[in-house]
Image (cartoon, rainbow, N blue to C red):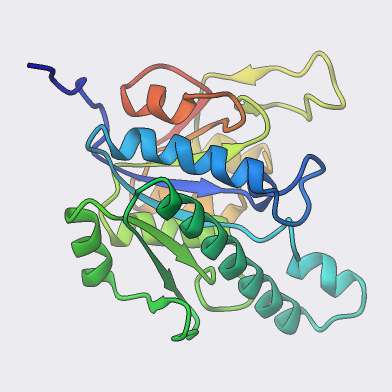
Length: 241
């Protein structure tokens, strides 16, 4: 009789950058990447991990970039929220094609395509083994999807935020520009804020610090990393108090 491996985390929040769902350049919807990420999520869901996901929208539209091009900031942020809904629906479709029950909950009302975010309903979905994708950010302009991840993780009682990026952790400088950049294995919220390490914004770090929500920043493009983290392997950079 086979037994499931011992899990370190039983309820996780996966924060996905929009680029993880884009094409090779990180733009638009890249079906190959979407299905690969869905497969990684399915892998841990089948191990018994309760998985919720917060998706970004940068592969389609970023509110800050829009404001730099003349779009009013609040309007640009709402456009970015709509981009996260597109990504959420693409990921839901990929998960369902792999046999994973999934629900999308949105912070802004789009009743034809997604449920409204209701905390107790989201928790019930998780208890039933469904993956829950949170879209629409916080529903408010001027807040990032990183802040939405910090908020939702605390609301639904996640044990940890897995912040998926294209690098293998937090560095003291940009490793793509500085070959001598140092990677941290562990760093505190205060250090991350004080050093202005831009892997998450200050509001998101502060919210995690206030709610004692640990974060692991890791490379989502390396196969099976989500599974390895769920089992407690040391990967990426751990951020705690």
